[in-house]
Length: 88
Image 1 (cartoon, rainbow, N blue to C red):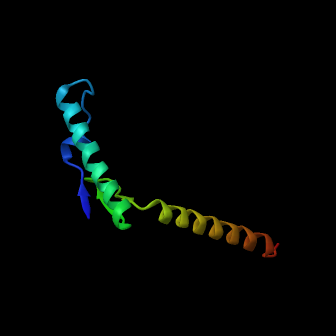
Image 2: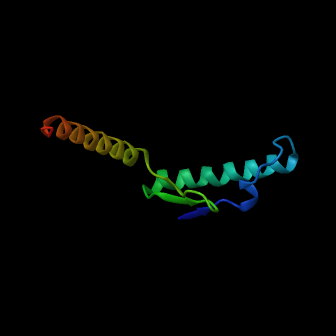
């Protein structure tokens, strides 16, 4: 699933206007639906933003797996640095 943020939501708005509150409510509704789909299907969703970094919404179990993998890579790299002899 590909969710795109409307360009009007990426602009700076006065948060006290009714129009901004409607847009924010709509954004919450879309994100709520996207999160529900990720939870139900287990499939990640890519959120593309205009001229900005993309974001991926993944199931919590996947995110935890990625965090563990990152920690293992970091620990392995740190161990390799400690074992590698220094050259003068």
